[in-house]
Length: 489
Image (cartoon, rainbow, N blue to C red; front, side):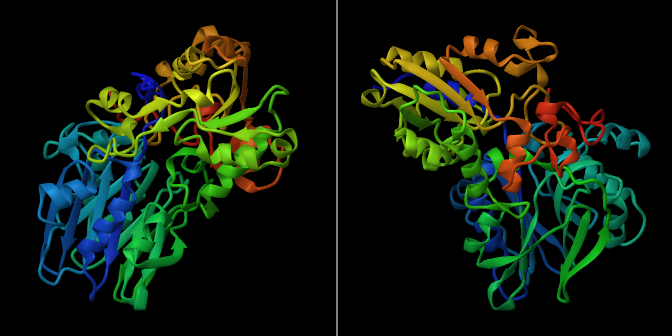
């Protein structure tokens, strides 16, 4: 039975993703096509638009438009941009946390092209310091301001890049092109991932947001760009040109939600991380649990960990599915409906239906990666209307109650766990949240358990910030000031 509104509730509860960036350097291969392959593989990080800029020794040429990468370069345009003797290409899949489609990347200015994933957190201060307008070439984003700041520095393009990057605070992974070389830069706290791959037959190098893109780009893993490192790729290979070492604060949401399950992020296999999340959740299964189902598809990795655990096997837990995602919906608009800029609810509503025979009369445990806005209450109502007897929720992330200033798009005022009626003694009251959601049982993974999933062994850390991961969205402790962030509103 198709149930109108199921997916709008499932998907609207999701955090919005970051963007994806790619770069390619090769004297012998089709750099533009390789960049396109990377953007297609990374479209889960952004579906609003895609752009590619190529360069040779003389000039840049680019194409950028709204839609999925394959739509932009296979339908709207006759392939990616071409330029005689081009040997560098950079690109971006866009999901915006501020601004409009007019601000799609890469941006080009004064001999430098730039693609950015993340959020600069000191934009207001930079604008004042360098007397920059709110809008540059029709763009108001932090990324465009970042390029302008780089070009305010003195010297050659590389000298400007080296100096300018040191002025940009916050969460950033950058892929930059000059007419001579390709550059990759990862912010000093390492919030966002950035990986270098080597093309087969030593034909050149690529830079990507996630390792999942490497195979279809014809590349093999070379190494990650280190936190605070800026690298140059040219005919001499890979060279570190700056290294700004600080306290590392890698975004734990990259592992738990944003990254593709076949990626390695921060050197950690995403699939293993999510499996460990599920194994940890299995320790807290209620006695009455019989069937375990994921919220598709975000809860699937943790759900597999639950059902594979020794505890679940000993208890006779049965894996099942309660929502059917139609694979033929979203072929044009993209499968991740929560990052669509328009018609999000309509697209989401059409995508799922309830598998009634797996629900009626059963005791269900629903595994979800996170609860953001609390729309799980609607899912619970729908499952009860189809005859579920008892419904428990297991959440593979602690209660989210603070805005992210580093590129994941949710604000404090929309977070369920931040609302006053669900607080006790200044902390989220899980029992009150359980009652609101209409669940018979609710368990959130703890801060230390989340670190255990990342590290692979139990830990006892009083302050999550003492680890190498950022958990500001559930701790409220931001590794850097965020007062200079450009907000989506």
